Length: 322
Image (cartoon, rainbow, N blue to C red; front, side, top):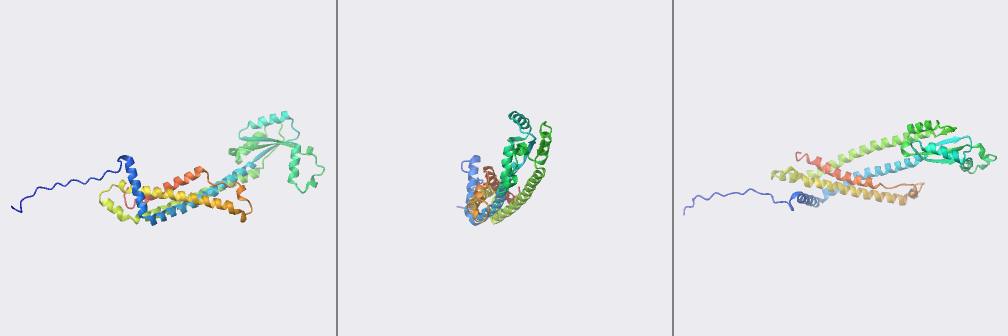
């Protein structure tokens, strides 16, 4: 037998990628999710550092947001003092009260109208001079004017709207005088505008800083696995196949960091309410302080997930072209 006898040609079958579990979009999503979870388990330390960075960054933003929300609530309570008072030089009959109430309530922006008689005005005057009541000996209610106190809606408490409202009031026949603390209203609205401006500037700065820190932290995470990315590219894996687990991993990291930061903030807030009475003069439990509303918490969780996703996406550009 001739050992040099020609052999039959060998047919090499092309390599076929094994189908993903379940096939379709659902199967691919579960496959990429399992890959992301496996990557997290295999790189525990790096992922802990990344989640810790996101947690700290979002905790700073959440703390600032908590302070800003409570300042806004306090400002809203103070704005109740934006009150317009209409004075009359005579005691109003019930018919007159009903007539003036109707005319004033018909104006835009009126929330509540309260009648203050001369006797009630004298009682208030005495309460303000508590301890010095002797100064009011001989003062009779007739020397004080009756009035209608008008509380405006929240959307009508700015300086321009109040001034326009007062101008309209003065045109109603029978009204002797209108007072509304013009200087106080102007200063209060200036304070609100200043607080919102500072909040917007600080908030914007914090958001930019958080994005920068988180993006670079995730970039270090991906850099430590650059060999894995290069090998996957060399064996023919598509860009989406390579990127999808990393993007899901970043999303999980961001969501975990947001949840931890929210829980820490809630713990700090409750601890402050329970122990602040020993080092501040007011009682925080009765001061109206409140935790972040549900929509703010949902926004923080969403921001964490988006932050981790975008951080992974931008970091992958160095190793995988878009």
